[in-house]
Length: 276
Image (cartoon, rainbow, N blue to C red; front, side, top):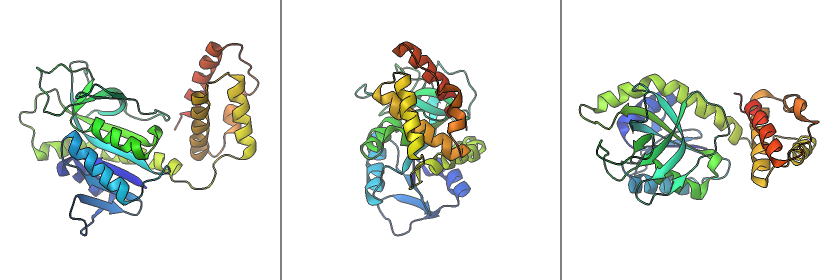
């Protein structure tokens, strides 16, 4: 299942059209739009509202570790951002301004977006606020924390579209949809590619392939967390490309003498396996 949360209907409308979603007329608690394995919920603005709505839909449809969740919406840009309005970002760090907690989504796949940190506030942000993140919104931290109860970090994504630079004057519902429209197709294509990997039920790697990857991890002196990441990357690569042994063949005979050397080698392998 692909779960998508969006705060406002004007943000969601272009995605509802692109994905050909139909409204669930039997649900009176939230606006939910759906088709097959896609559920899109309009949460309302604010961290509490968005987290509550997300918890509702993930519970209602029994979210499992094969599902993915994507939060999509507009954001403001701090003075650290020098990119044009309409730029799409995949958030690599999410900060809750209320309690200063930070969350770090796993970035396992190459993607067509810019990367930036996102800071979520409980109020509309202006130039007078002390902003730590590159981007600001009012939902990201709330939905990420809620989603983390149900799903692992590599199956949670936060995608933001730059709408303004902490000046919301002149922003209308029509303007929001206009800014989002050009990026809808590329965002939906990326989500579908990730979903192909996570929605598979049968084992992706053979026992021989898993043994080889385990041996490779040992040769690089990887930590347990890095070894799990290597396995996930290998699974994702095989789904996209149809094979994995050929991709790893240049690295099979390495034998790193230190963890630092292994970390450098792992970086090269990650670059290879993250190719879309």
